[in-house]
Image (cartoon, rainbow, N blue to C red; front, top):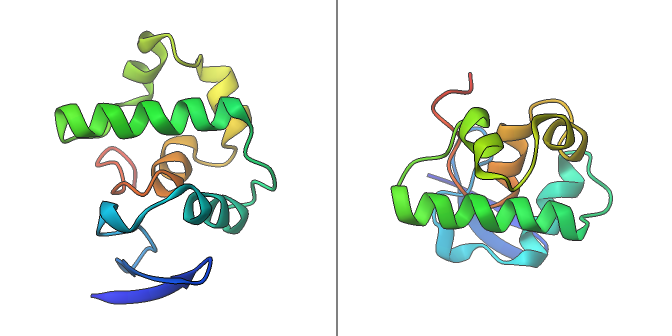
Length: 105
């Protein structure tokens, strides 16, 4: 297992940079990952999506699909892509400290 320093903390990550231990995540680390992923400023809308993903994963032990996310009413597909451009589900789950969605290559 690899480690990486993010926002002054050393965390465990996989080969793609996803945290492998959710208990090492906090919002400061999430902000730093967002910057690495090209999102300069996390807004309240970003955090709403992140918190939803974390709650969904905690309850289901799996990441929701974009379709399920849309059906949740938390965010529509167009806004999701604008909040997390260039692979919204991969980016948002990485920022959330969760594993890479199985549906993403």
